[in-house]
Length: 574
Image 1 (cartoon, helix red, strand yellow):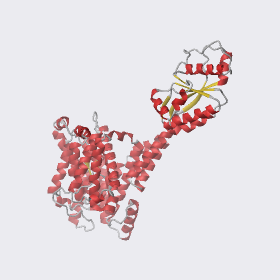
Image 2 (cartoon, rainbow, N blue to C red):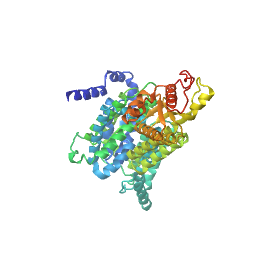
Image 3 (spheres, rainbow, N blue to C red):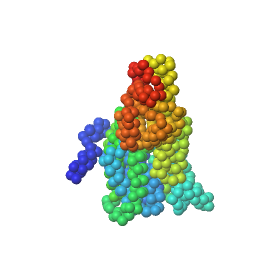
Image 4 (tube, one colour):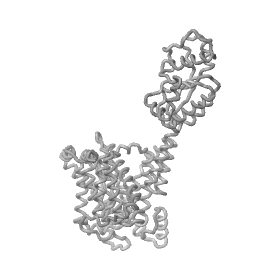
């Protein structure tokens, strides 16, 4: 027991910040502080907007950006990652809020944080590399569509209709707008989105989101536009940390949503950290530390009324582009947002909801990388199918189901492609030092097959059909040195084929079985069967000599005066 606790603590100790992280902070603090300030300006409207979209309010978004942003910066595995509320997480949270209420979301966030810490201790971060690119692209496309659709009610200035499916809610919002148009709200949303999209092309380094939001707020206040509904009152500070929301009796009910939130937080955070690595030279994040930092961030955020957080790709990209070099930039971002919470809450409360909707609409549009999508679709039909299925599932179902569907389809198509690489070919017997007449006699009664590639469940059935369909011969030699991998299904199929051939009176010999394949063959009894009567050989020439001796003993062939050379060109190999 004590040993197990010691091992767990040793793993946790590896995940904690060290001296190297502190040294990074001292390299260029001025540049990091400027980068952090820039990111905070970009993050403010996003944090407010995602808080509103989640259903817990703008204050929840700000609390998440401050608390989770700071903790993930300190304990995370990337020096450049910026964390906080994100659109992808909002997509998952909306139905949870509708079903379990705000307290349910806080409990789910806490549970997800514990799960993320557990994944970090189990060193599960490395498995992110197995998520195929088409799944990630389809997932991102689907998220962008859902984020955009979620903003339609606020962008049109109508109350959010009832419903869990975003397509249904969007349609009802459009119907409500048609009955009673709110052109003021629609104009604000369209104007803010247009300024962001056009400004990003004109001056990519300027944070046009905050410029557009400030302009929209000033216009709404000076013109007295009541139709431009503001965010509303915000608390001047973070709430006192509390666990009053936690209901132990509901933990079982909330387990499935918590798993979904943890899975999404892990996927998006590790993806964002990978993007940051790709934008720099010589940087590489620690995936397990990143999960650990995100876990601590999600444990703490609900205590302050915050929603679950993840690494944010857009904010992380801004952080890198503005010259950040250490965690100090992300910490600065959280500190600036904390100052805004304490000092400028009355001003922030006057921002029109339609303006925030415009920010998120532009963000959704900018998430879609058209060039990357075109390249993925043109790559192969399989990649195009995976991308489209994942995107549609994200839009029609939810993110976790979408990723599962994408991974299952990608895995099935990959197995199909690998199975096609498996080959089962008849190869001629090398003549060696036989005369033409002797070689002809051997070839009439002995047939050799070479198995190339994987012999596993996806390819085994075809192997069985081809092997048992062999013509009437006396001996079959299986050359197995080129079998790249074998599973239990492949071994069972091999055993079944040998038994069927033996019932027909055909002797089966095997050569070149690799060391790594012996265990699986032995586990199903196939190796023992091949070893009977000495029918397993190291090299093919040995198997051919044994086959000839068997035929001589059976009286099928006369005793030949020569023996096959063990140094012939191809058959000297296993």
